[in-house]
Length: 594
Image 1 (cartoon, rainbow, N blue to C red):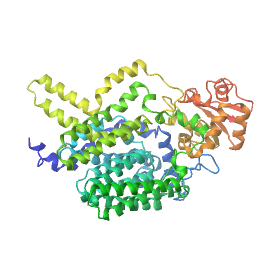
Image 2: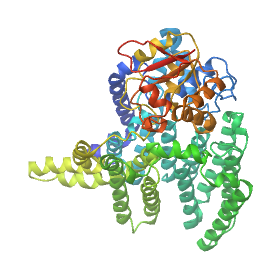
Image 3: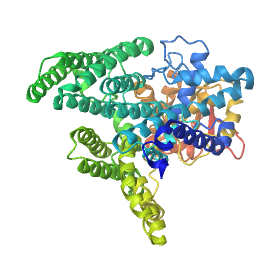
Image 4: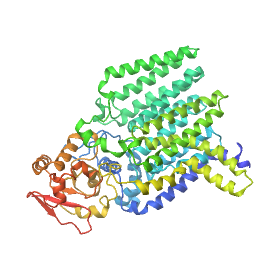
């Protein structure tokens, strides 16, 4: 069929095709989310804090001051984020406000903003499939991507956290890695990496792997000097520009959890060394490998000597806070500590992707120009799967990286079944091929496992938010918002939503730079009335708020009858707390400090 040839419309008009798919899926997403858009139902704590940061920016807070003053007043909470992901939200709000008014402009801004990185991610993944498989293979990559159950929610309307943009930039960097045009590919990967690091460090490992693969291109073939020179210059220059434009006042200090002087020096140094390597007259691959190893060793030693504090976990939380909180965040746990059903759903698509890359590499073993990019993708995919056994928070990135490899499976299996003369095999085989390609082969068994064996872990904090409760709803917050403004002592996962939906301030959210405030909250609920009274006095607290059944409630001492959490749940507060009568259907319990 002509549409499947390199001269057909699938090859020539692939950009229009991707745009049409994105537009259709985006419209479906919006319709599915209309009730949540109307209710401003930002379910995740990070989404809520992102909106609070955008409001502060539009309200006139200084550009380089990312302190969130609605948390831990009056000094505020030190937030390590960048304003870069705030800009599309703010721009959409300013564009829509004259037509819709402030409230609805804000709702549609947070609904539409995540669809922008969604489009970029789809275009980049389609480009990768075209480059490593065939110019007409891009629909298979889109199908695999849209079936990625952990990845796609990161681009859904209202998901305004910065991870969607970081995933999009990872896809762009991957597209640059497999670009046959060397200089263009280097610039693409370098700029995408710089943008991602400007936003945050969550994709650092995967971006470093792409950088390492780019350097190995040059080791194999000196003709790749143009790629590493372009990559190094765009990476170093882009990171420097990102730091100058977006690094907050706090991030201009040598901190380990953001693009600070620590990581800027490492990234700029790596970029400069790559440019230097590109101009060295090293015709032999052994000499290039040795020079690259020396450059990498010098960079690593310099980093260790200059920034030794950043060799451990970048969060830098105390041992106590890590034991109480960070080790109990479900996304920070390894794959083998998840329920079996959840683990299988996470790993199914990455396994399909790895198999696809291996198949493609085996078939390209006689063509070096095609083989090396496929080997690089295979190695990156394998490491991504291994990282799932460290923390499942890398699952969205692992699924994204798997998409082109999964498309390889479909590319090889679907034509074979479609040519079958037996209708049952033609239909059933095609469905099986799609199931294997998309990772859906695990859906039925995992659903059975989930129904039979999945139990709720009331110790784990799920997705940094309340799990299965009505507490995040606008209706639940409305009576609280009617109370006179004050500072509220509440579990950390309730804080960001509270400051978005009401005029009240909170003490902390689940953000590692505010460890002392978080510990104050945990101690206040886990210990006795005297300890809570100290926290109330320190933060000039006006109200105490609880959501019965919140995920991770054992972190606050719910299983200890002597804890303040348990006493409040038993409705036996100290005499300096007065119960506030909320509507009968309210999921909250609230007390006023006398």
